[in-house]
Image (cartoon, rainbow, N blue to C red; front, side, top):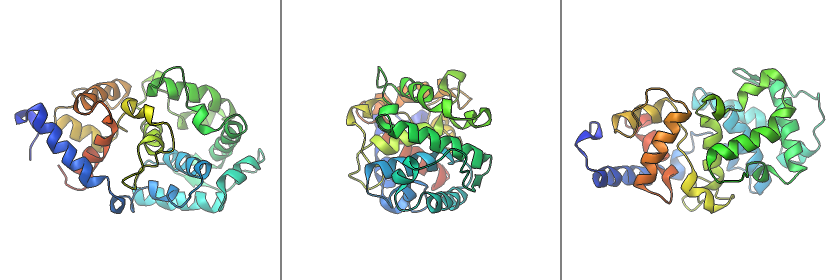
Length: 253
């Protein structure tokens, strides 16, 4: 199937709804970094693992999972307890591409601060449920614990970043768990505001389908794609992440 220039809006919605249903299945996450967070049952443990794994989610998925396994070795069976007992300067040995033990030290300190002051969920709450506001609020709370070199690992939408990994993390936390993929442990009223984690695959497929005209994968592209997805499903626009990613990775669309 070629790009959607010949499809009506209703036909495009039907096509993408079918693909979203097809790919939002547990068997498709066995090779996805989210599988690591599914090993835990406590809310805070899930949040910590999901946040750290999403942070290092760039590159090949097999490499991300391999690095994620090393993170789990560090965190142990009770990630929240590890975070709350973490001491500045412990520097657990870790590296994933440009994310190293200095970065991890800062992230653990930032997480510790969050859980000592209402939790990670509260750190992402803002005056509005819009993703931009939530990320910017989180940055204000979290980044003071990071060294200058680590700041780049917390995306800044105000600088134009697409913030793919933070948006992906928010999807994991907020979308319903009924299909066994996302966790649904954060408020469901966020659903209509969730965006698509924009990467090479989702960006290219979105352009082929006529959902995205902007050539750059940046925050303005996020907003453009979000408006298109809301038009297709105003209650759960982020579900189309499964369709776009699946079309790119599994179908070479």
